[in-house]
Length: 416
Ligand code: G6P
Ligand code: MN
Image (cartoon, rainbow, N blue to C red; front, side, top):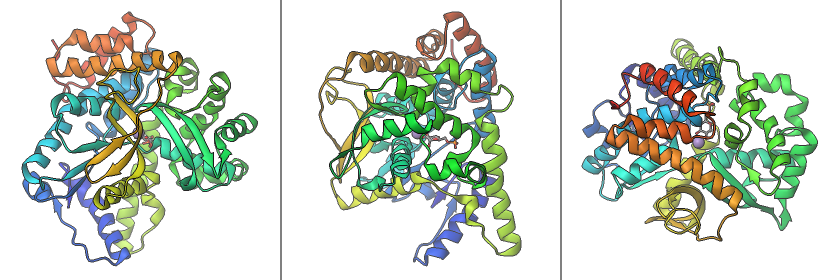
């Protein structure tokens, strides 16, 4: 069942899903529904991803902070906080539908962003929900490293810790080789986390319809070099650039054309043009719905839950002492063994002061935002903005927040 609250978009996406089912020649019936009861009825697995406010509001999340000289990003900094305030309550609605209509032992596998804030809101408001919040970025980084070093990413051994979009690989090994060091050396030598093959054919790569080759992602892969040089101990998640290289990222941004514009003019428009062409001619250009690693990741996780495989996955879970020197109730992103009862987390050593300090500041921002959403408190939300590392002063934080209240008036809870 494909469920959406936007029927027009759902009809188009449905064309592609239907095509894929036919292509795979499997005995699966597709139903499109806009009714929660029909859609969630007796479900075993619910794959969730929502974008509240769609790309029009993503564009605002990116452009408003930039106007004030701060990082403008979908899930990090002020943009992420704004997106969080839009998403918390619709996400809780999905959990409630699942509890009401789905099977008792259902699982919700959730990609909805900003995942750190969404996870904290789930923990606060629906602590018993059968939801696993996930992100594909660390896996996508492993893939990039695999391409750079010409080895199979699926055969790498890794260890990782952090918050969502705020973490580090602490170990990377392949057949006993220390890949962590090789990956850092590669990035420093080549100035980017792109394979030599792509670097050589960069112009064609940009045109290939693969999202990690789009202009803004190319900057992201290049900024990995600066991060690795300045902080060489571990291998960083690329999202750390927004916090740790914020002035550089702002200087690389175009205030009038952000990632949202790139996506609207590229992926979104190509997808719907592809659907139209298919309906007119019966010819499907598969490039138009390229799915990336996140499609495989969510399926592999569902298989692990269903078959109780105990396979290791990175998931976002309540800390509960896993990282002993972080708060018990922090929602952390760490490896866990996946069984039919959900993630079984692996406990670890305390983390160093550098990481602890950075994480605690970011965690406070996320927790304050969720507290502000639940209590409707302007002051708490303002504090979330002030404590965020991407925003330089309390004065700027207030100016951004006030602009965002205006842009989000149809989506945010009322703040008093
Ligand atoms: C990565 C992140 C996702 C994020 C996406 C944005 O995959 O893990 O959380 O939504 O990038 O990609 P886009 O192509 O829309 O900028
Ligand atoms: Mn993510």
